[in-house]
Length: 399
Image (cartoon, rainbow, N blue to C red; front, side, top):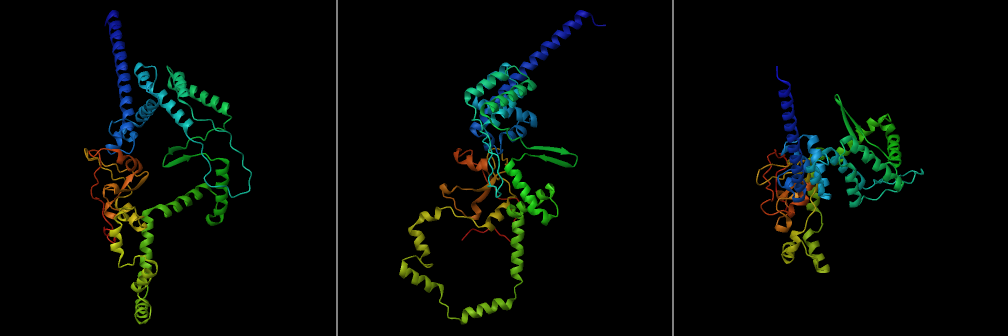
């Protein structure tokens, strides 16, 4: 049996080692927050092919979703208040309190949502109350002082009290609750809040679709809206409709096409070249024969951005499966983000690139917006598509 003094000595050593490990964890957490604060400032995550700093923290640093959220929130808080890193290193501020503080500040800085479409009904709606102004830097630092030394639950209570005080001072209405998403078995429950004007629009839409759908069930109306939105913006469905139109055109009898050709040959319609020559003599405008010389006189017109046809956009979208093609030249990692994807140029127009289909690529909004600010060594490489091209849509340059 171990003596009493031995048990006390081992317990003293264990507690000392635990305290030392805790201090090391706090120091490492503060250093990691300081590193993550530099990532958005220098676009380090975007240059390495990650669409956001949270994805960078999860995949590159190996953090879990909760760890990434807490540390990224603390890093964004440190960008506004640099003393946050020092407070974390001293142990005066916890990561849970820092993330809750950042969420509160971001919610307070978010502009008030207004109905985008005017209500087409003669229904008197309540006038929204005055929205409190965005918190100043002094108010943010004062709020930071309130949560120092507090646990996660205590910080949440302090922040909730601050919200009520601020709302009562500005006579503001209750802010819109955030949307929620909860998995229940094989189903997923989505929750969101509507204002009075939005609810009136929703009820009117349910009434208008009640005859078409046979019900006023909100789930049926939402499914109809989803299908309508996909029919409008999904490139795959647009391409399917285009092919159906071509199939219908191909079924036109050949005799009708031959009769049109005979009418054009036997008729006395003037050729288009003569019409263009007459227009050139009367107005001085360039004809089709002089288009090339006209372009040589004004070479800057070639560099103007041209609007791409819908068929070209669909082909590019399907070719790259609607994902960002930014590739890091150092690691070879591809972004492949499917959110906020837009069209971009492999070679920028300012560097002599063209608007041909072979020079168009897909890129997320972050890479599309921030790429021109990077150095030459950090510019992405865009490899040729590894996806199968459509057999009926060859990759050809625009005329």
